Length: 296
Image 1 (cartoon, rainbow, N blue to C red):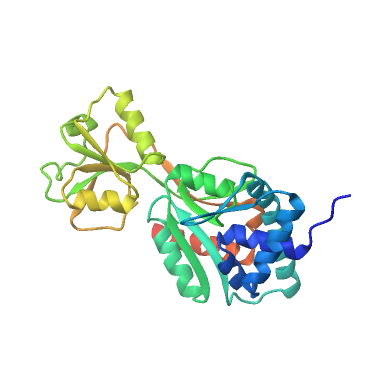
Image 2 (cartoon, one colour):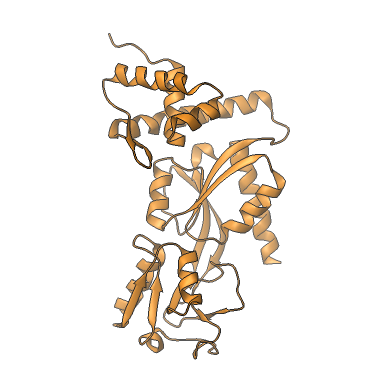
């Protein structure tokens, strides 16, 4: 008969998986690192398999680790919900929340407001391309994703923040910067700057180029949206980006593109079972308030 893992082993494993670090997991649990290490080691011995592999840039979960985390993270979330109901929190004083986005805006205004209201809450924020963001959500590696047109899933709750369209972004001193509208055909002689593989923007732009039988003389692929902005500002070319996806600059202009009239939804997405966590609910409320103010 197999032995049953202890709650301490499950909790230690879950927090190491969340943090991808034994030391940070120990800090979150307010225990010693050796205690966390021992609990995980006992769990690995009990399962007869390795749960983590040490890499230069941190811990990486094995297949067994990923499969176990998909279950234990839900248990940890449920336990947190129970604790919050029992304690009936009157206010948020501390906590930790992981947020990702595929563009700086609309995420930044929401993060700024949330940070002002809850200064003791630790916020981890990183930009990822669309494909990576969806993968991290599915693997429960993040709490909240602010992305464009997220995948539909029974396991995800999605709230629309705004609807937006793609625009041609270029320097204000560009010869075409005075246009009210522009056709992709007019830009074929320009260098096109796109985010990395896996981004929704690159997928849509390349689809439109193929649909209209266009040929751009040169396409530069970079990483995140801020890198695209920097490339445009330095005169490397023009970029197709969602309207207001970058912080406004008087050195840039954005022009509607005739071949790209479709509207896309910028959404905030969370795992369904985390939606009622106090931190998550507060973040969603802040997002709604910021959205309402921006519409005024």
